Length: 410
Ligand SMILES: Cc1ncc(COP(=O)(O)O)c(C=O)c1O
Image 1 (cartoon, rainbow, N blue to C red):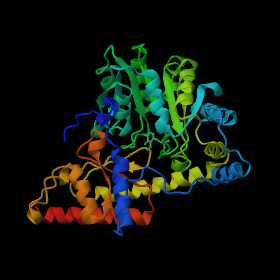
Image 2 (cartoon, rainbow, N blue to C red; image 1 turned 135 degrees about the vertical axis):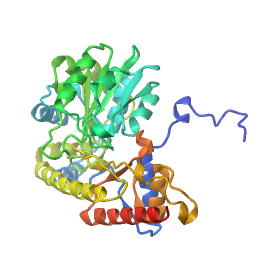
Image 3 (tube, rainbow, N blue to C red; image 1 turned 90 degrees about the horizontal axis):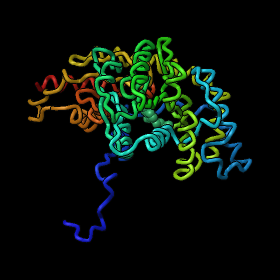
């Protein structure tokens, strides 16, 4: 129907805005589960462990003590101090508490940073496969996302040369995410240095270093912070991190930015005019997590490492499936191209792409995964191993059984 009054016309900004495909798939799986369907859900972007105990206890105390009012928009001073101390201790980064801003989740920290740094027409370089929100958030800032490809054969590591080849006078922001969602790739220190050299050659370029999976790294890997490379690069980086993944606090919504004063100030102003503070009680919880969560984090990381090895072994045993070894995060990102194009003999419906593969896995095998299309990587699917060993075993069984059926159907 034609809208003559124009009253239903929405802003250009949101007209093309896609919902997060990871969240959409997760909601779909949860809805099916609510209808009583037997479902294995491997879409989760969150730890399946409980929130670290110290955080939960501190939150209860905060409520009891009536710590339930507005706080400073960029976060309570003790938390900003504790974050600055953490960044110095763990990441070799020197920020004053005033240069740290607490946000309602790292997702909003990224959004705020893009709003502060980008003008319409600016270009935001996003290595692919990418976390689904980077290009959409760039567009919300009026900027143009520019995809920087990585190669599966290279472990999906973003290379300095690929970044350099896509820089223009309009390039404003380079997004780095190591360890990466969805691939788990960790940028090795020598490549990070080379990326630093490229950034230094382009004075207008800033780096948004999303280090949300920093603590979840395996085989002794210790991801490095981009801003720690040199004072010159520190001065051009916004470091993003948060509590969701490391401390199993996704629902609490606490993230943060750390940036030099000329960006930290407008960022704090931006928060004061948009969200105001992150939830007071959640800030108390985050402060306690930094102080007392470590033993639980270590146990969680060890368990994720075991699960990663198990899932990799199971996937690699499947004909037509291959999978790189993720250095961090809690996802595997197998290449499924070897199984596409099959299934015709069963009902005439060939599985043509990974979007239809994920849908059929959900409907026919009761296995929820996320197709690679939303990550800029058709031909791949993302499975989260933030699930119990029993769930992972059952998920792998279902995948194997479904693919076997496809193969037989030719
Ligand atoms: C790469 C990446 N960055 C940021 C976030 C946002 O985390 P939160 O907003 O829960 O702090 C996520 C969550 O899935 C993520 O995967």
